[in-house]
Amino acid sequence: MKVLVVGTGGRDHAIAWKFTRSPRVKEVFVAHGNAGIARTATCVNLRTIEEMADFAQRERIDLTFVGPEKPLSAGIVDLFQSRGLAIIGPDSRASRLESSKCDTKVMLRELGIPVPEFENFSDPDRARDYVRSVGYPVVVKADGLAAGKGSLVCDTVEDAEQSVRALMEERIFGDAGDRVDIEKRLYGRELSFFCFTDGTSVVPMVAAQDYKRARENDEGKNTGGMGSYSPHPWLTDSLVKTIMGRVAEPLIAGVREKYGIVYRGILYLGLMLVGEGADITPYVLEINIRLGDPEAQVILPRLRTDLVDVCEAILAGKLGATRPEWDPAYRLCLIATSGPTKGKKGWYKGYPDRYKIGLPIEGVDDIDPDCLVFHSGTEINASGKLVTTGGRVLCIVSSGSTLQQAREKALTEMEKVRFEGIYYRKDIGLE
Ligand code: GLY
Image (cartoon, protein in one colour):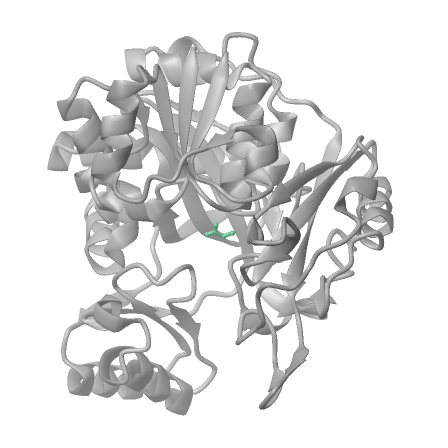
């Protein structure tokens, strides 16, 4: 069969790689990919969802899998379905669960799913009055999509006022800041939890630990993710049961029964676990409609079941009969980013701030073939050289029977990769 993967990042490289492992798949296309993905699959330069649907029809693609949230929110699933093309991902109505933080919080509260106390605002003055009145630290969230950077965690009332100003008046994320969701800041343990769902049955995946901050010891700015590992030490069977029973299942059933939204594809719950043992409450901080990046890079290599079989079960509404199998060994993902470099007019601070692109990358072919290499921001330049094009450049995924073993392997292999200003966190997986 022929598969089309939509995406250009490390997560999307991991998805394409996983499909190449299926004995049922003859060819994998990726729209539009990058230099690393081109080593795994056939990259096709399709930029709009219409071009992708035309390609899928013309090439008789049997299955399309969407990596990022933007094409999902833009309605790629609705478009493909209207043309009778098989595609995995939530449709545009279901995608609102990620693209409107404000509406989603209201929906979750109405469904009785645990959420922090919150209020939504479209008027910055009223938002400021609110943060002055509540008497506890808050998180100010842009309503719309902001590349994972739209949640501003505030320590003080002044921080909160500044966040309201940045999102709603300076409009640092454009229209995404038309409205804000202001919620009580919770203290506990943060966990990303992933499920497959066909709109009725919900099947949990294994969990992964993501590292969002740019610098070691969880310092520095929020990023899309600097590394990850799986299995997750907190995810006991009893915690899985709690999250499924209190969040994942009531959410999928609730949006279907109360709002008529049939949510199919990947469900990614950003949770704050408050309390311990039997008293744990999994509060929903955010919902994403896709696999995480870099969580997918450690989760998919652990999936022993053919991803095509899982996708077919989702499409047929028969996921309830599927029990995906997982490799118990650790996987650890270490991301090399574009770090500080000197430019003509001074220093570039490096990802997630400004960084240089077009820098030649060496050493990738020397990495131990036991590791996986997934690219996020690379291309082949006019001289045929592999160069950087993004803040996150590429990652190495190592495996080991212990987390420590996987960590040491990834760090050793990363020493072989060289480009000007390369930066990676050395504490990924360090407990
Ligand atoms: N790693 C966080 C995300 O994918 O949103």
